[in-house]
Image 1 (cartoon, helix red, strand yellow):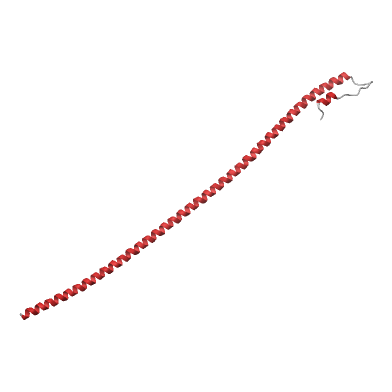
Image 2 (spheres, one colour):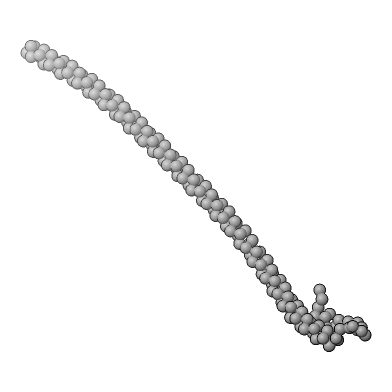
Amino acid sequence: MITPLDIENKKFSKQMMNGYNVEEVDEFLDEIMQDYETNYRELSAKNQKIEELDNALSHYKSIETTLQNALVMAQTTAEEVKNVAKQQADQIISEAQKEADNIIRTSKESVTKTLDDIEQQIRIKEQQYNDVKQQFDIYKAKMESLLISQSELIKEINKDE
């Protein structure tokens, strides 16, 4: 690329005949040099601005990528937390169900044992009742027999007298 300095330092060979007017050529070259210098500076400034914008764009793309990765990670973490919470809830429910089943089974066993104990006590008490009744019947029979024999004895004594 030609710089404004290249234009300014450009020298043309002069011809003796049919040559260009040196002053006109120099004036024209000065104008071109000034326009070219202005354009060159603008282009340089714009190139610098483009480079700054490219750097900023790269920076923002990097931030965007980082944010996307963070979002994906947050979503993944949220899913994992949700899954862990569900597993814990399921485990708590399962343990509660097992404990409830255990309490019910223990209660049933306790009630069954208590009923068995009560039935056993009833049988024992019935047996004791039957034993006492039988002893009473035996005692009653003995008493009747004794009374009869006493009555017979009194009759015998009364006959003898």
